[in-house]
Image 1: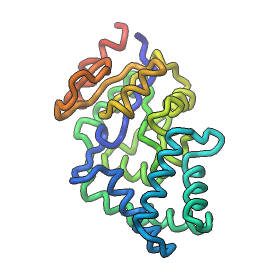
Image 2: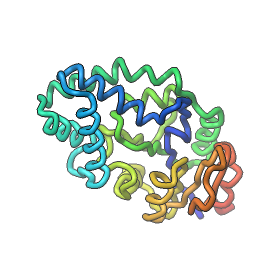
Image 3: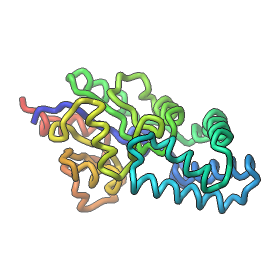
Image 4: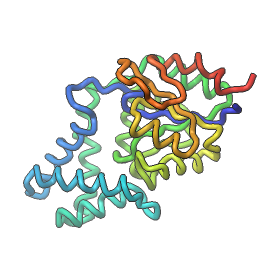
Length: 240
């Protein structure tokens, strides 16, 4: 098949977070702590509100506004805090506390080479990370992973996306932004629930990165254990 676009998940795919907890769990704890201190609220209550808001946005995409706008509106309303003050505290979190993730964050050594070879082949590349984090947080992680200096056709983030994983509209928006068709696109990710199943639902071919060989029947079109293996299976996607 002629290939137009490759979408890459970020955390767990291009980037590796070596920590006892998942990145989203650490972010929830630290962001909850930040808001708790800023607005004098009980931290567990704040964490519950944040989880509820994320769930709502994932299930019902805002579409008319960005994920960031929808989340900030909902958080401000549920916590009973000023919307402008909330955004100011959130911006400060991304400017300062967010950087503590860097010590446990690194890139897949093969990622820069794989991305460059795809671009050299005339294939567009997009970053398809779950857009719950704001743009500055995504750009920082791309830099830590060593893959920030590429001409991506789209980088998903809470400030740029109008739907989140695993909703199919998340993938449809990337296709639209990159001017590509699902049948000529592949999605590469490490999670079946967020990366493989929703992408397949709209006709995108999928590649599961299963570094630890944890998944049996993944339902992905291809399974690889090393990111560089993606180049070995490209012949299955491209007519020679």
